[in-house]
Length: 263
Image 1 (cartoon, rainbow, N blue to C red):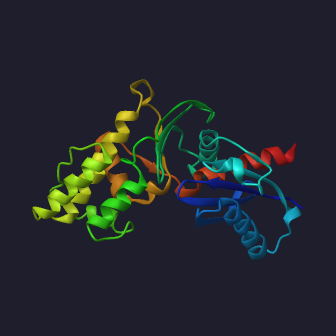
Image 2 (cartoon, one colour):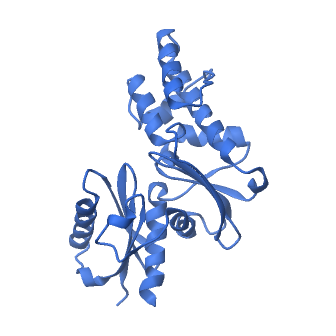
Image 3 (cartoon, rainbow, N blue to C red):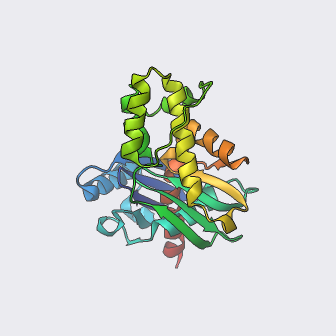
């Protein structure tokens, strides 16, 4: 009987899990990280075990990744999130798609991972010092504009004249948005402008020599159709959104777990 393998991605905002069997994603779970990542991780394992009516011994290996990977005692080992994301695309990207670049937009950081033809990491760039260009940034803007994070993307697509957002710092951009609201600009145009501003900021992180190959977008930010559209407009090319975008790191960790468990 083949084993199950579990990947846990302890992010700054959410803890994600992906359960694999025979290289296929069987289930995914996401929970707020909370103040006790360890307890949250154990609860996820228990919930998955009960849901699929399996014993702990049926899970051949558990691999952790992400910010809190070192403190997740339920895991057998941990791996860097860059490596996990690179592995994840083997499942989350279509078979005919050959991503040379992974753009991951998380809750607190955004990163660009450059891959070779065999999905090995060649290089990466990370923005983890400023919230601009992250999911948390859009949550703040959504609050100011009295909408929800789920609606910012669809609303931005209704824009007819995107606002020009010049600030690249989250604090100044927040002030700029408040000023636009006070001047009665349509929130749909403000949101479209914010998405374009985010896309430009992340694209500036890209290494010119690496702008080749297909582009795969992952992370919770990839669920935002407004950011996706802004990227395609700014890059002037197709950008593919991964399957299970929020779980790409967890899927990669589970794939690595299956390799370790097979040894």
